[in-house]
Image 1: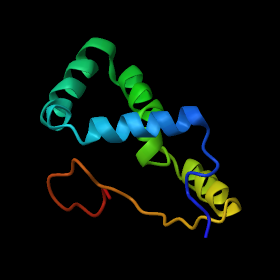
Image 2: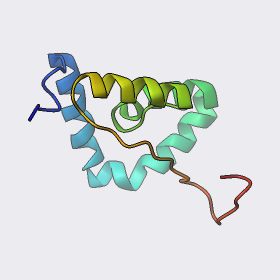
Image 3: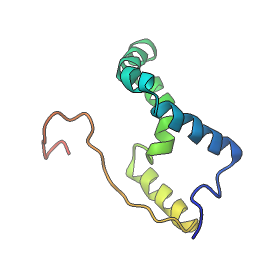
Length: 100
């Protein structure tokens, strides 16, 4: 059995530790949505999304495109780690097939 963090650099491990600790913080959980809305207003959608994707987004998701998903799954398979492709529809207030 191969350790899933075996190929991570020290920087990547520290980044993951930092992100995991923040995500477990009640302060972060209670204020993240407010902070994201403020960031959208101050920095704009593109810059805010870029910052999210480079920090926590890169830890928890493959990216915004199917190509990034395929690339990540192939990289994991080369390391002997199996992945599952899944989609998330967070933010939808109701089930709407055409949107999904």
